Amino acid sequence: MVEESNPAKRLAWLLAQLRERRSISTENALEVTLGIDEQDDSALAMHLAAIVRLPGEIERDLGRLPFPTDNFVVNLQPLYGHVRTLFQLGQSIDQFNGALGEGVRVNLDNCADLLASLGPERVPTREQLDEWRDEITDLADEVRTADDISDELREFLLGHLEEMLIAITMTRVSGSGPLRDAYYRLRGHAVVAPAHVAEEAKKSSACTRFWDVVGRIADVIQIGTALALPFAAPVELPPAPAPPPIVMEAPKEPPLVDSPIEVPPAPAAEEAPPG
Image (cartoon, rainbow, N blue to C red; front, side):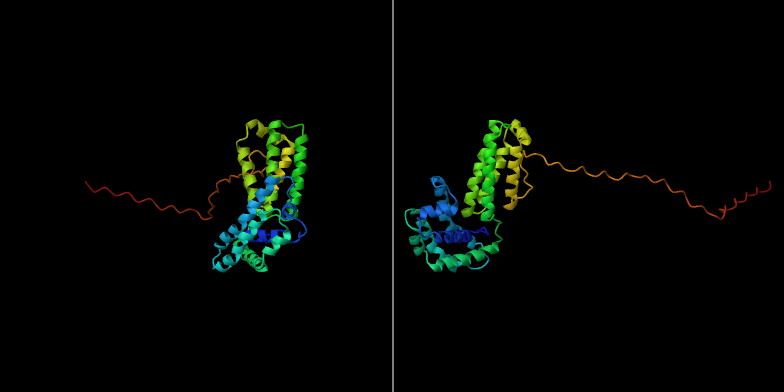
């Protein structure tokens, strides 16, 4: 399973999965490895394009390291040609693995370890992705049969659920980027949604469950909860405690003095001079 989101790790994972399927064609091995419907040619083409970009992504990320990586880049050059052979969908996995020497695999693993030092983003495990796929598929079935939502809201929810399913499949090759993109598109669509759809969404149980699933995915891929969805159901917060009453203190009396206050004698009157 993919634990770090760096291109070397993802490509190493992919090649390891393909090596386990020597008895079938490259095309079928990719479909099984990536979890793509056999009839979905567009999804397969999209994944192949992402796979071919991985060597370039490895080279780009190696360039961000604070120490020389030229040796690794030179040794990874054969990856460009070998990964492109994945486009030749009729060939066998044995032929593909024969073209990819052990030295390239060792360098790939070393690059994965180096790129882990860049602070890779957290990526869901394969088990987590499968769990989300099952949950979203079940939720889509609920939305299709719900009788308490309008067709407009149903179309909104089903469209974004489909995007999330595609993004979950892409995550195995492209890291968390596709899931983040799907999340941001959802936010943008929600911002411009008509007011009546936004109000309806707050009252729908299917929509509440939708926001719950999306929020949990966002937390795992570290988008953060600060980006609250625009028309998710409001969270009921407990009332704030009442402030303590303000007590006004009476002014203090001056202290009592036991000894009498001495008053100085008045000055004597001046005598008038004789006439």
